[in-house]
Amino acid sequence: MISHKLATFIALTSLAVIAAQAQMPAPATKAATPEFGHAVGYFDTRLKRVVIIGGPGDPVDGGRDRMWSWSGTTWEPLTATGPIGRTNGAAAYVRSRGQAVVAGGARKTGERWATFGDAWIGDAPGWEAIADISPRDHHVLVETRDGGVLMFGGIPADRSAAWPAETFELRNNTWVRVATDGPAGRARLAMALDRKRNEIVLFGGVGAAPAGAREQPFFADTWLWNGSAWRKAADTGPRGRYAHGMAFDEKRGVVLMYSGAAAHKNAPLTDMWQWDGKQWTEIVLTGPTPGYRYQPVMVYDAARDRTVLVGGTGGASDTWEWDGARWSLK
Image 1: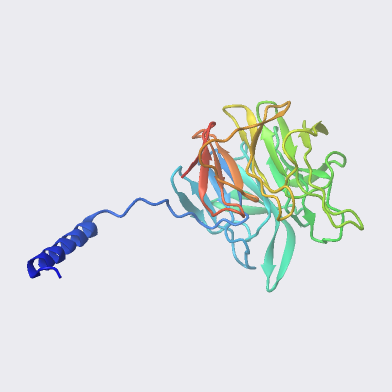
Image 2 (image 1 turned 90 degrees about the vertical axis):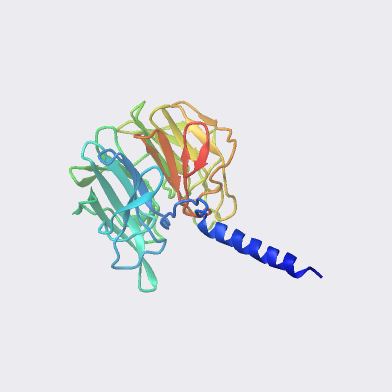
């Protein structure tokens, strides 16, 4: 048994420790990140920030997409009056206009999913509806070298129809078909404008299962768009994949690609590659990484020389940055 004096001393000491702990500041924690789901993003040259449009993974009919901008430390809300809420849509930013284009995607209407083909142009202050596209989701938009927007791929609203292999360009707010040959129809691909070589780089994606077959093809091909036609540039390099992230690093002059999946719900990838205009080279990663990401938002922040990666199924809605040598959690 302990003495009365010793018990009193222990009690007083415990109270002192508790009081001291109450006065100590709370330990630092990572800032909360909105739940982006399958959002889309771009770098806004006017705001000099990465902007994300989107939110919940299952947008409900009637809601509007929220817009957020990245300060380098936190995501700050811009507006909740963007285009009609959607998931698996596509977006591209046109620097010459200082505006973004958002098109396609899907949302829940009651208990059913609806795929749509509306298209919008604008920014946080306001959006304007422009010419529709053929309804689709899981497609890609990217800015062209002359200030247009290129669209390729996706899954049509009629899931039994052939997946589109045409290439469209937005000119004067109208979609113009500019090519019918090139990459095979596919979805969940990735594209980026290589500003050093003035060409658009396309890699990977997943195709529709051939008639009578159960397995879908997973592409490992690289295509280049020169402004008027597609050219296959490589069949070697990264493992075939879909739902990966891609962005052009303007300072280093390379296209970066990260993660994705090699087979449907079965082969998560955590590798990283760079394209120098001629070939892919794997980047050997050291230290912590974002891990597996399925359809993340990946955007180069030209104001801060960082590639920002956020969200994506397979990982939390946390934010990572690539500084040209390593990943860091923000």
